[in-house]
Length: 146
Image (cartoon, rainbow, N blue to C red):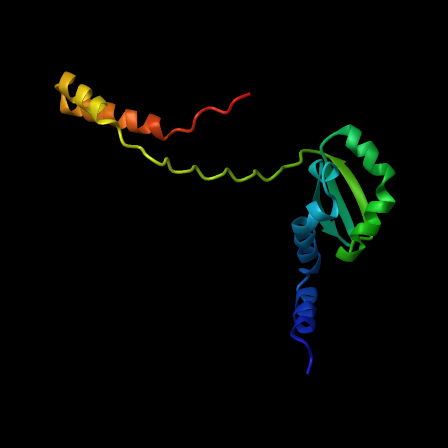
């Protein structure tokens, strides 16, 4: 019995999707293959006929990478890369996810403040808007100290 992966790889190869699949796998693993700081300044753009095009974000890194081209090629042979070309361009980085905002432990307004606000403001809409603004400001995190 033939393993399923052999059959799938043959289908992917026949459809001409093998290099596209390899490129996506390389993009997924790129930060582990080339850790920072190098990985922050380069991005794999295309893979055609074993030639990988890498976008570099500055002239300084472009010159540095040309010196390390052979070492980079050794790391990339597992992805079907036979040659590397560099091109100056913009490297897009994925944004880090923001940490979820923690819910405030207690957002209740002290009773004496509620009493003062409700006693002095006659308009019910204005009173409710002010109470809402007070609750909102109590939920905010304090500013980070320098």
